[in-house]
Image 1 (cartoon, rainbow, N blue to C red):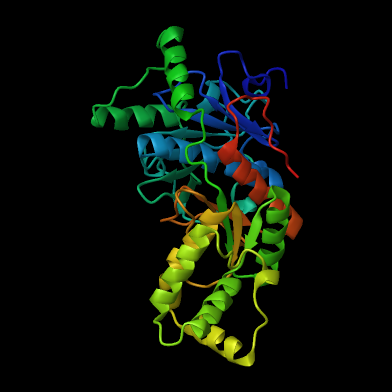
Image 2: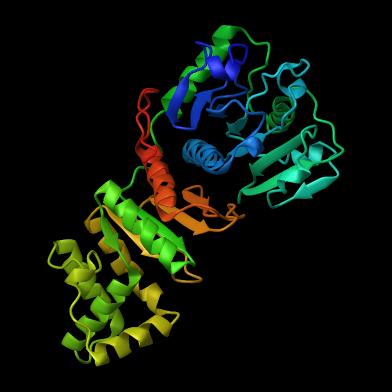
Length: 388
């Protein structure tokens, strides 16, 4: 829409990166260095009005922006303040309300400041967020978890900015007033571009995890194929360890794992990178493999081997192990698949939580590849990410 500032993107709004469905840009009048907006490509009133993949793409861009801010500043908050144009443009709703979330290097609980009668830690049902509702969505705190506040409350104009300013004043942190000279806002944005323009944590490994083995396997296989990477499976690693145990009678499991890890680092073996490389399994080998899989302490011992394997080659790890926190070398990417997924409190900013409801493995893989490419995206707005 020609009247919508987010659809026409004025010249003073600097784009950090973009992808189909969303773009991340500096706020036209930032509250402080690192203040960016995540804006939907579709002209809808709020993120809660986006469907399926569009909603997921916006959240992926939001998480990437948060990861970059977190890597630079150590603290981050993500906020969206509903559908009301009054709290955005100080005017009646002219139809130019456009979905966007604020990502800022400061964290505070905005929901508690609204007086909303409802506060939820899970996404409200669509019917709860009726067209006339104002609401606040946030991810804040040292262990960011999603919170919604809605129903009966009043959202003041420039609500996010005014409340952030209060917190910044309490912390004696410099902030930029809304009515500051344009040059001050421009200088703030230029510093944000310098600090946040480059992906914070590029890596060469990705973990795809979930409780549905079939979905995880199919999605991970598709991701590996699209990226041209090797596919790693925990079961293949277990089998290779059990096999090497038989070649080293009397040697303790930690010694076997350490020796195998050194062999991987030297390039002598490539365990788990390809199922076809695993030796034929004898009944004895299968029995030992099952015994290892049942031992809760085994994967703690195998962690060093897993890290060595993932470092050996760009890799996608398909992981369906319950109650295990997958890790990747350095600061790679972990994508957790589940129906109705929402990032819970305590999640790392390097994680993605994909809601698989109604998505095929190919669609899930496209979202995972998109999340990975965001990590490596160039700062140029023209560097669009392939949606698959």
